[in-house]
Image (tube, rainbow, N blue to C red; front, side, top):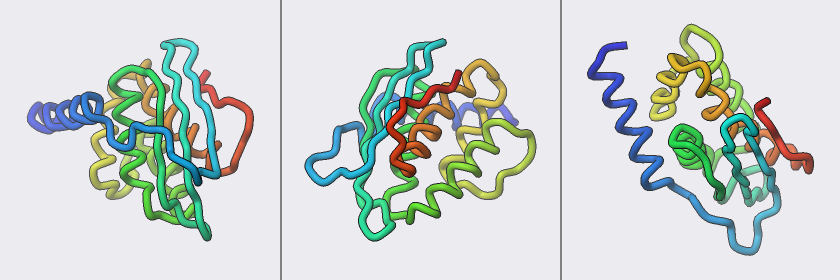
Amino acid sequence: MTQDLRALYEEVILDHNRRPRNFRRLPEGSNRHAIGHNPLCGDQLRIDLRVEDGVIKDVGFEGAGCAISTASASLMTESIKGKTVEEAEVLFRRVHDLLTKQGAAGDLGKLQVLAGVRDYPARVKCATLPWHTLEAALKNTAAPVTTE
């Protein structure tokens, strides 16, 4: 990865950490939730979804975490709003592959910035926590999610 590209990726991560999108608890009408926790670094978050007719109509998240965890959650919420549950599940697998495997995961648009996290193996769990929590919310799993 070139230095210019790395700087751009870092700027996007910092922007989403400073001004996370959809950082809120959903008002009435949310019908799927999940809680995620990374005990090693202390990241905690809650994902709320409003799913209607198989489409994610609204999404919000709350919690406290490092810059990578917060940015990943922010980018995730932007990318899944308006998608079907099935499309969000496919996106989860593609982003998980991007973060955990070498090689291309296809064009992920803005989510491609998360690829830089692979260079910091200890931070991969931070970036994947929101995605695993999303997966649990999509399945309406009651047990808290952990990346440990």
